[in-house]
Image (cartoon, rainbow, N blue to C red; front, side, top):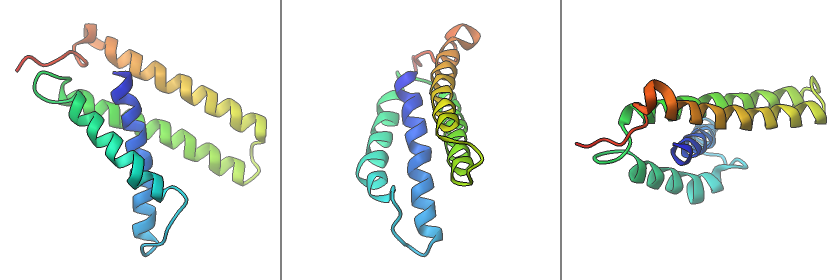
Amino acid sequence: MMTAGMAGLILINAISHTVASIAGGGEYNSGLFSAFVLFWPITLWTFYACFGKGKLKYSALLVVILIGVIGHGVLAGSVGLYAQNLIGDYGAAVIQVLNAVLMVSLWYAVGKIRGGKLAEVRNI
């Protein structure tokens, strides 16, 4: 579940940079290159390898994406607070460490929910 979870976080990052470029009239942004060269291919391959017949359930994919949205929201929120000088270096660093702990904890918990039923391998 950890691998799929990390791919969910990367997917949200790729989406955010792609949408920002489209919304900006196709302008380049700092994460667009890595989104297309790394994040989209890695995410799509990971999801292909982790979900489907004989793999993790698709319901787990939705949870993985939701957790990715939460993690990216915390990241973007803390960057915004930092950019507005509402938090300092230390505060931003602490939030990012806690965000990483939150992500790992959520991915772990998803694997344990209902006795691991959500993250169990499908036998169909």
